[in-house]
Image (tube, rainbow, N blue to C red; front, side, top):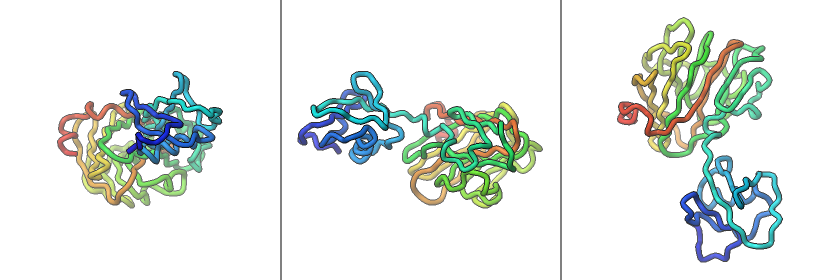
Length: 255
């Protein structure tokens, strides 16, 4: 909790207008300011959008001020459902636009892709839109970014996944290293896979086109990244994040 009795150098306010943090002394850069805000109020730096006089502050900008000032803190969840292209070891095989992932330059057997930022707490509803899948597909959550790229095959993945393939055989909930936990309906191009994740209880619930499929507990603790893969040129998956309140009622009850 912010110490409101501290002398003010930079005052950070939330959208409600309430003070959420004071940063003293004034940091040299916006990146350092964001780091201080994360320490005080827990909002990850990557999800922070800071506005000063209605203008955004860029991470690499220097803070040229010896006088106290205020900034507005906005939380931008876009990195939770935007694929991490720059950090992917096989980035030259794929193209990314926000939550859209395409295998337009694929010259390898497959590429695993994770979101830019993990979900750290609370209940989150995500959707995987199956625009085009020509072979196999794993959609789910993993603990870190170590499986991104082209070195970890689906049968060796560590996480929890909705697995399916073009032949519509063997679709289901898969745990680590390819073991099928239960059978699910087989998605087709144009279908939407829903995932409701309670990070605090580790409960992950799956649906297909709004129809409940099943649930599982994700082992471990800590943040979780959303994950998918492409393995044929022309594959196209999309990750999006509707409001949790838009999740089907039976998914909410299952979580």
